[in-house]
Image 1 (cartoon, rainbow, N blue to C red):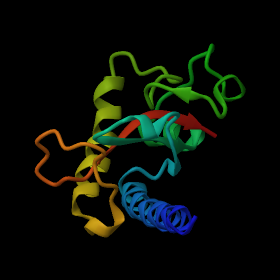
Image 2 (spheres, rainbow, N blue to C red):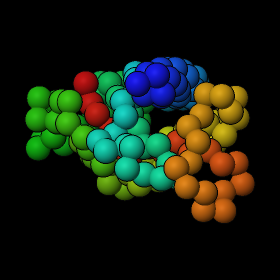
Image 3 (cartoon, one colour):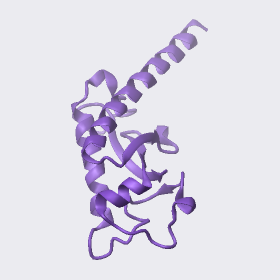
Image 4 (cartoon, rainbow, N blue to C red):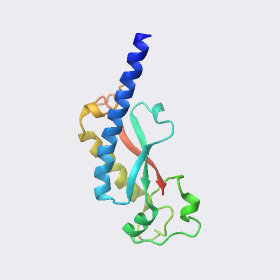
Length: 147
């Protein structure tokens, strides 16, 4: 019983530390991309052995303003609100102006690279090592949740 309690307490402390590390990264991301307002762990995030996947919470109107785009008719805010969307530009008329994959990749690269610089005690260790140099899971973005 004592070992179980110790294990649960260690997990809770670890989760708080990991959340703090992700918060640091996302707060930095907000400076570069002011439409980002938060994050949440992606569904089934614990199943991945070498990565933590997060969904970025973004403000619809700020994305529209940041990129100077018009909305697509089929993607009004009520239709996509609080749903996971693959690319940050999906609900906007981006054709001929931006590549949605590249724009989403820019956010993902920032998150991944910044996570490498935070202190190790704020990172989650890999479940299994696959030749990783650090021994810690990487942080990756998956979807975008519009509010």
